[in-house]
Amino acid sequence: MKKYFINRREKLIATLPDGCVALLFSGVKKTMSNDLFYPFVVNKNFYYLTGINEDNCIYMLVKGESIFKELFFTEQRSKEKEKWIGERLKKEDIEEISGLSSVYSLNDFETVLSSYLNSNNAFGEIDAIYLDQDKSNPFDSLDKIYEKKIKNKYPNLFVRNIYNNIAKLRLIKDDFEIENIVKAISITKCGIYEMMKNSKKCNYEYEVEAYYDFVLKSNNTIPSFKTICASEINSTILHYEENNCEIKDDSLILCDLGSLVNNYASDISRTFPKTGKFSDLQKKLYNVVLNTNKACINLLKPGVSRNEYETLARDTLASGLLNLGIIKEKDEIDKYYYHSVGHMLGLDVHDIGKFDEFKEGMVVTCEPGIYIPELKIGIRIEDDILITKNGNVNLSRDIIKEICDIEELMNS
Ligand SMILES: [Mn+2]
Image: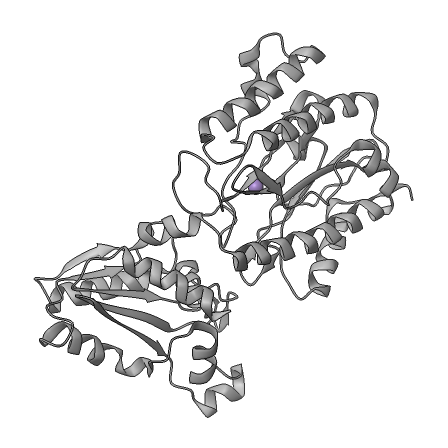
């Protein structure tokens, strides 16, 4: 496994100029209330480069002319603390996972950092320091603290942002990442099937959701984002997540959900009738979305622009609704479809990285939908697609989405 992390760091190092230091922080546990903490969520850029999932760690890179050194700092292990919260990773574990062999105590971090910044050593003059500064990242508080300290102590040093260098790398997935996403999708599939098989006997949205949670817990994982399990009017709210309403018998259930494997997310949507039988109107609308989903997947390959992808989704949905007489003019589609058709998927559900056209190795969602409050109907069908050399692979192709297959599964 460590070869992947080593490879990613090599690629990152190649993007940096000589004479710099880069620092990435794993993050700290956030207080929820009093002595309770939120579950720890690692800074994804830090994880991407190291594979380490622990709080209070720092990855440090020093780059000179044709020479570089990587160091890792972790909290000193304490027998007393470990009685309460369990063991931290040992030096050997860190090396085994990440391939990083220079592991130091966090207490030594500032001294070691100064030794590279102050003296003229083998790395030559260091004139810039890179921090991972993502505006939306809750973990950048540590970076902010160090930015201040460093600016005070070394006023001549440039402080730069390494975020975009890493974001660019994260756009293209390696085999390990794809393997994890595929595993996350297969757990999600089992969860969705349990929801489909049991929705008939459920009265509330959260009861249907519970069948999903059971499968995830049984697979030792958690949702990759707050599960959406919405019926009737709720399904027309894009990020409805209360899941606490009673489900009418003739309602569709829109679920949008995922799971996490090694921090990699799946993100799938399926829509099915509570009682296992689509009405005629539901069928017609469902097929508009399904046809759009298929047409958009068909389009995906290297070189296709994001714009073409979005336009095809909007146009196909519009012509479907025009045919059904739900809208009279093409532009009216904006009333019933108002999100983009896909986003990158990876360590973040809405994965980072800017792009204009698709390239081999990207993983993107395909999730057209229509939301018609007047009819109390919302339908979204979402798959996770890997862009390959000549086309794409639908990584979630095994999760049924044809009306006949859904009805058969729900009534078997
Ligand atoms: Mn999505």
